[in-house]
Length: 128
Image (cartoon, rainbow, N blue to C red; front, side, top):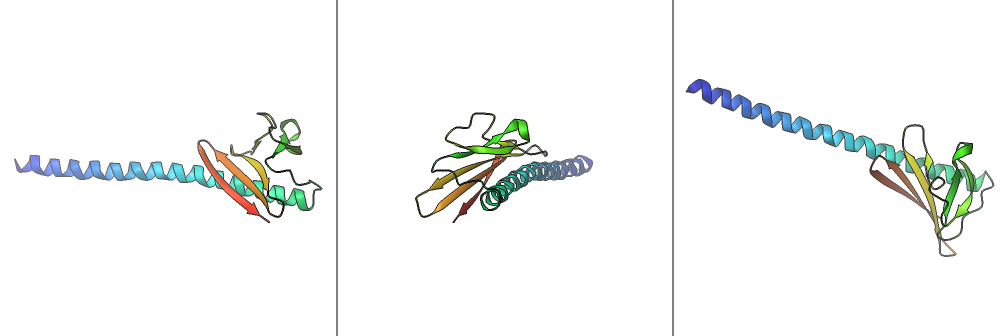
Protein backbone atom coordinates (compact mmCIF):
# COMPACT_ATOMS: atom_id res chain seq x y z
CA UNK A 1 0.00 0.00 0.00
CA UNK A 2 2.82 2.37 0.85
CA UNK A 3 4.46 1.61 -2.51
CA UNK A 4 1.28 2.54 -4.36
CA UNK A 5 1.08 5.84 -2.46
CA UNK A 6 4.70 6.69 -3.29
CA UNK A 7 4.29 5.80 -6.97
CA UNK A 8 1.11 7.88 -7.20
CA UNK A 9 2.90 10.85 -5.64
CA UNK A 10 5.84 10.52 -8.06
CA UNK A 11 3.48 10.25 -11.04
CA UNK A 12 1.53 13.33 -9.92
CA UNK A 13 4.70 15.41 -9.53
CA UNK A 14 6.03 14.16 -12.89
CA UNK A 15 2.81 15.07 -14.71
CA UNK A 16 2.75 18.52 -13.10
CA UNK A 17 6.36 19.15 -14.16
CA UNK A 18 5.60 17.95 -17.70
CA UNK A 19 2.69 20.39 -17.90
CA UNK A 20 4.88 23.30 -16.75
CA UNK A 21 7.54 22.41 -19.33
CA UNK A 22 4.94 22.06 -22.11
CA UNK A 23 3.46 25.48 -21.29
CA UNK A 24 6.96 26.97 -21.32
CA UNK A 25 7.62 25.55 -24.78
CA UNK A 26 4.35 26.98 -26.10
CA UNK A 27 5.20 30.42 -24.67
CA UNK A 28 8.68 30.19 -26.19
CA UNK A 29 7.21 29.54 -29.65
CA UNK A 30 4.81 32.48 -29.28
CA UNK A 31 7.63 34.77 -28.13
CA UNK A 32 9.78 33.66 -31.07
CA UNK A 33 7.04 34.60 -33.57
CA UNK A 34 6.34 37.87 -31.77
CA UNK A 35 10.00 38.88 -31.90
CA UNK A 36 10.24 38.17 -35.63
CA UNK A 37 7.04 40.11 -36.32
CA UNK A 38 8.27 43.08 -34.25
CA UNK A 39 11.62 43.21 -36.03
CA UNK A 40 9.83 43.04 -39.39
CA UNK A 41 7.77 46.09 -38.38
CA UNK A 42 10.95 47.83 -37.20
CA UNK A 43 12.60 47.02 -40.54
CA UNK A 44 9.65 48.63 -42.32
CA UNK A 45 9.98 51.76 -40.19
CA UNK A 46 13.69 52.11 -40.93
CA UNK A 47 13.19 51.45 -44.61
CA UNK A 48 10.43 53.99 -45.18
CA UNK A 49 12.19 56.69 -43.14
CA UNK A 50 15.36 56.15 -45.19
CA UNK A 51 13.38 56.14 -48.46
CA UNK A 52 11.58 59.38 -47.62
CA UNK A 53 14.69 61.16 -46.34
CA UNK A 54 17.42 59.94 -48.68
CA UNK A 55 15.89 57.78 -51.37
CA UNK A 56 13.67 60.33 -53.06
CA UNK A 57 10.43 58.57 -52.10
CA UNK A 58 7.65 61.08 -51.67
CA UNK A 59 5.25 60.61 -48.80
CA UNK A 60 2.07 58.78 -49.65
CA UNK A 61 -1.31 60.44 -49.36
CA UNK A 62 -3.72 59.80 -46.52
CA UNK A 63 -4.96 56.22 -46.47
CA UNK A 64 -2.42 54.81 -48.94
CA UNK A 65 -0.10 51.82 -48.67
CA UNK A 66 3.46 51.71 -49.93
CA UNK A 67 3.55 49.36 -52.93
CA UNK A 68 6.48 46.99 -53.45
CA UNK A 69 7.49 45.25 -56.66
CA UNK A 70 7.91 41.57 -55.84
CA UNK A 71 9.78 40.93 -59.10
CA UNK A 72 12.59 43.42 -58.37
CA UNK A 73 13.49 42.30 -54.88
CA UNK A 74 10.94 44.54 -53.23
CA UNK A 75 11.71 47.96 -54.67
CA UNK A 76 9.21 50.64 -53.71
CA UNK A 77 7.12 51.34 -56.82
CA UNK A 78 4.74 53.94 -55.42
CA UNK A 79 1.66 54.35 -53.29
CA UNK A 80 -1.90 53.22 -53.60
CA UNK A 81 -5.08 52.55 -51.68
CA UNK A 82 -4.79 48.96 -52.87
CA UNK A 83 -1.51 47.76 -54.31
CA UNK A 84 -2.80 44.28 -55.06
CA UNK A 85 -2.24 41.10 -53.13
CA UNK A 86 1.34 40.64 -54.34
CA UNK A 87 2.45 44.21 -53.72
CA UNK A 88 1.16 45.21 -50.24
CA UNK A 89 3.60 43.04 -48.28
CA UNK A 90 7.37 42.90 -48.50
CA UNK A 91 8.68 39.44 -47.65
CA UNK A 92 11.92 39.01 -45.72
CA UNK A 93 14.37 36.13 -45.96
CA UNK A 94 13.46 34.83 -42.48
CA UNK A 95 9.81 34.23 -43.41
CA UNK A 96 8.46 37.44 -41.88
CA UNK A 97 6.81 40.17 -43.94
CA UNK A 98 5.76 43.78 -43.50
CA UNK A 99 3.50 46.44 -44.94
CA UNK A 100 3.58 50.22 -44.60
CA UNK A 101 0.48 52.43 -44.32
CA UNK A 102 0.35 56.26 -44.36
CA UNK A 103 -2.17 58.47 -42.60
CA UNK A 104 -2.06 62.26 -42.34
CA UNK A 105 -4.24 65.08 -41.16
CA UNK A 106 -2.22 67.75 -42.91
CA UNK A 107 0.04 68.70 -40.03
CA UNK A 108 0.98 65.28 -38.65
CA UNK A 109 2.07 62.27 -40.67
CA UNK A 110 1.53 58.82 -39.17
CA UNK A 111 3.25 55.80 -40.69
CA UNK A 112 1.92 52.47 -39.48
CA UNK A 113 4.34 49.60 -40.06
CA UNK A 114 2.87 46.13 -39.56
CA UNK A 115 5.17 43.14 -39.24
CA UNK A 116 3.78 39.63 -39.60
CA UNK A 117 5.28 36.23 -38.85
CA UNK A 118 3.04 33.16 -39.10
CA UNK A 119 -0.13 34.29 -37.27
CA UNK A 120 1.48 37.01 -35.15
CA UNK A 121 1.24 40.74 -36.01
CA UNK A 122 3.21 43.57 -34.39
CA UNK A 123 2.92 47.27 -35.20
CA UNK A 124 5.46 50.10 -35.03
CA UNK A 125 3.90 53.54 -35.45
CA UNK A 126 5.86 56.64 -36.46
CA UNK A 127 4.57 60.21 -36.03
CA UNK A 128 6.16 63.40 -37.28
